[in-house]
Amino acid sequence: MDRTYRTLFLCGAISVCAVLVGCGETPPAGIKFGSYQAVFASKPDLARVEHEFPLARSDLAQLTPGALKSYDQEQMDQLYARLTAGPIPDGAYEGDLFFPKGISGDRRIREIIGGLSGLAAGVGTAKVELVGKHLWRGKVFYRDERVLRNRIDDTSLLKPLIDGDLSTLPKVTVNGKDQWLMFPARLYCGQSLLDSRRESVIIDYFYTDEIPGYRERPDFLAGRRGLQVRDEIRMVRPGFYLGRAYIGKIFLLNFSLYNKEVAERDGGAFTKGGQVGEDCWQGTQQRPVLTASK
Image (cartoon, rainbow, N blue to C red; front, top):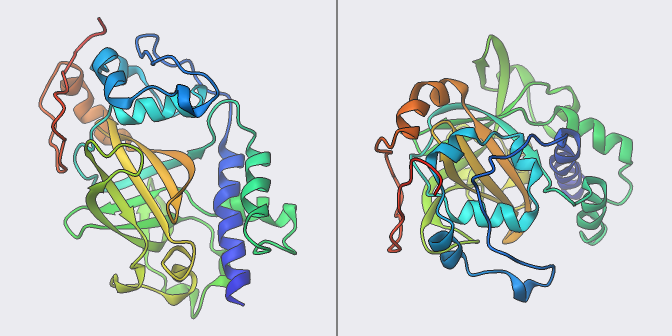
């Protein structure tokens, strides 16, 4: 039975990406990238990219979650590597998972599921897409507790995966709508699996069973006995974070997190060069703060 639970969970998580991918918005012209080709050996050193193409806050202020979908994966990597962790978020954030430009969501799903040693055998595409449409609608950060929980707005499809009475599941109200809280994770500063020059905020599900309120099913699916999910995020600007999701140590997809209230409250000061709180180690490479593109 555990294999079935893991299958439904993974298929649903991956399918969210295919459902949410849409037409990307136009990204800021001021954000530049190091040159590269298709072969991996041509990828530029990330430290050199940051030195030659420092990010300007005026460009980051114009960048939106939708515009990220206009970038290919190498551009996403170069962008992420030039960000710092910023403050560990607090409160509710809207989530959007996506594949980079040039990668077919459907094809990526087939590649990942096909490599799971039969884990997804017998699960129909229609069921996978149906689960994916309703699984996640964002996250809630509990900064003081260093804990995160995922917001789920429809538990009907997850009933076969949940033990006990659904009415006992913890809830949160976001924008006037009740949502259930599942899949808790630890929050801490740690090494990025892409760019070890500075730390990222880590969202770690490995020891999810040690977090108060843990519910064996479905929460174990994201933990060390399940998919071993590990996310990492860095701040684009206040209220807006760019993330990378891993299963084990294998990169899976990109995602964004957005809190409109924080973005509107703190965005102006950020664009003008105001100081930003940094909870994580920023590394030893000098990082210039540009208010406008060169």
